[in-house]
Image 1 (cartoon, rainbow, N blue to C red):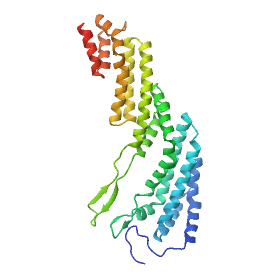
Image 2: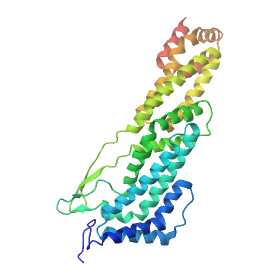
Image 3: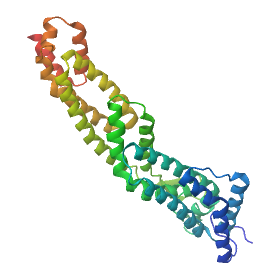
Image 4: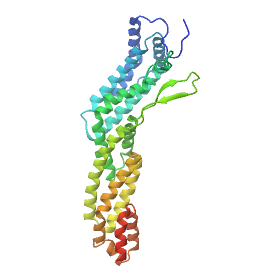
Length: 342
């Protein structure tokens, strides 16, 4: 048998009957157990010997020309588990949905990890194969994990996207804004999932003969998923902060209002450091400053306990806190300066 370059299908192709028998063996000794784990959470007792037996089957049949068929088999199994998870949680809402979404995502991640380990030969010697004549990639994907993530996106995340964003904003983040931090880890988990949906790896289009100089040309990360989530988050933030500002200015004295909003803005900045990145961060800050400071500045000047009263009665501590709050929104400091001159 002749020597071959990486990724070439080699040897005389075995009869299809042998391949079908090998697929059944894969199913029986490992794949069905992994799918059952996604369904009921019972970890299969596969062991190193079983994993090696599966690897050997994949090795042999990739070598003997069944790389594409094995990839299709792998994809069918990932798709089967993914659709089962979607059907299980598609009609849920609230914290039931949040908990089930995280549980399904964790199980699917474990499935993808386990499958990628036993299909590693397929990744390295089929998906990463080269066309000798043109010296270009045969396949766009780097490995079966990347293929699996596309299936997860298509049949699970994308179909639940609106529910995910609404639940995150209206349940988890609103809960935390109202002082409940016990679900922060759930928020972090979902945000990491959203961010991972935007990951696009540059695809190697050409590899030089020396393998030292290579040209990577790929898609730019556009953050489409984060943008879509952020648009909903911005609407939810505006709605929440409008109600908060109106309620607080009615119910608190000026010093109480100022203390309350300094505390809130400090906690909100901590949240934004966890949930929001780049320019998105500043947009939310600006919404907070507009409704909590700018829109209520004149009221804080004129209230019986307001800034004018603080100057007259020389309430230095309260004036210091007022300056602290208003320094977030520089234009509001002009009203303090006017009051000071008067």
